[in-house]
Image (tube, rainbow, N blue to C red):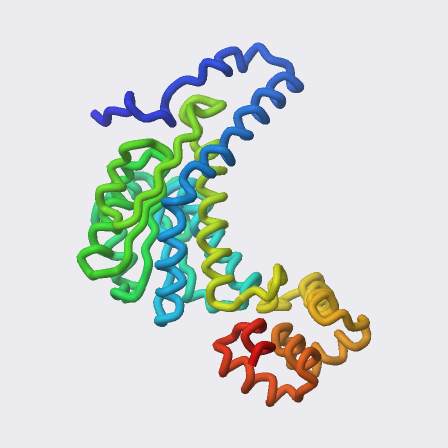
Amino acid sequence: MIDLTNLTTEKRNEATQDLDKLSVAEALEKMNQEDQKVAIAVGKVLPEIKPVIEATITAFKNGGRLIYLGAGTSGRLGVLDAAECVPTFGVSSKQVIGLIAGGEQAMTLAIEGAEDDLTLAKQDLSALELNDRDVVVGIAASGRTPYVIGGLKYARDLGATTASIACNLGALISKYAEFAIEVDCGPEFLTGSTRLKAGTAQKLILNMISTISMIGIGKVYHNLMVDVRPTNEKLVERSKRIIMQATDCTYEVAEKTFEAAGQDVKLAIVMLLTNCSAKEGKDKLQKAKGFVGKTLAQ
């Protein structure tokens, strides 16, 4: 029998024991009060998050990948964060990858027994040809998911950088990670429902890891997503606005330069700020390893 008695995420919340008697307004207020505790809890573990981001930046610069590994809600959050890196930062879907126990089906359906299989993650990582340049982040609210433990063990044996995110202190998965993040948000609003506070905490941390790592490899200029991929009408218009904000040009100039740059926002900005052609801009960016700021400083 699995002993869950010592897990904070499984304990009853003293402040919410009368949920079934509350009005909608009262339940909303209590839920909001509990949610406000999450950001504070994440703030306490920033020193543990920092080295994971630094290792990820190094991995990206060396041709490595960021791979998230989880089951259930944790796995879905990893897949979501990985998927959103593609349009936001213009990276390949192979640079940030989310793996979930049970595969794609598990995004919408519970795959029985998948998270309890110690060997399944090894198979998934092996299929990706995991190597020692990669970073593997195991995510488990409980901190004891066998799928995640098996994946971290395999990654460590191959020499990959390993990190873990758990929502309980003294988590088992922490023993298998080079960098362990343990965030304690207290008992859930609804007992044991880790898609709530624990899921929010995990989402915040994953946002930090992916976003700040992308800043570290030149995907951002000031606070603008200059490598955004314009895959729909909204993103096309956002791209033009980014060019306007970065260069203080008119909409017409931004639109014209955007097209001349092959709809490459970063290149269009460099073309306008350095008064150069698309070819010259590409050369300048290449020399600066993709950083707009460094390109302008040359």
